[in-house]
Image (cartoon, rainbow, N blue to C red; front, side, top):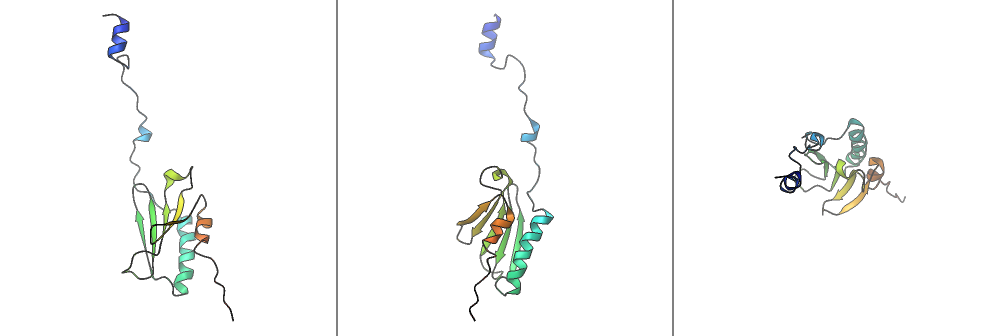
Length: 125
């Protein structure tokens, strides 16, 4: 058996293939940073003070973090603020999802995404 026959039978040439461990490392759940939570809770607090929202939930999953906003604790969430880091280079890591599942806003900046639900209301006197 010569070297040409060996390379046909063993595509790696008899050596073990190297695998990047960083790609296979389990880093744990995704979480919001303190600055991100401050922005979210500022908007949430304004709507609680106005009597529109009453409850929230935070979920830290393996691929995303979710801040769910409820009118009442017994209902489905009105909105979900989602942080999905693997989409950061594409559409942006942050998205705002309605209770129906429709994506209302997506972007790279959390402040711009939250601005969609924090618009001032027109008051006519």
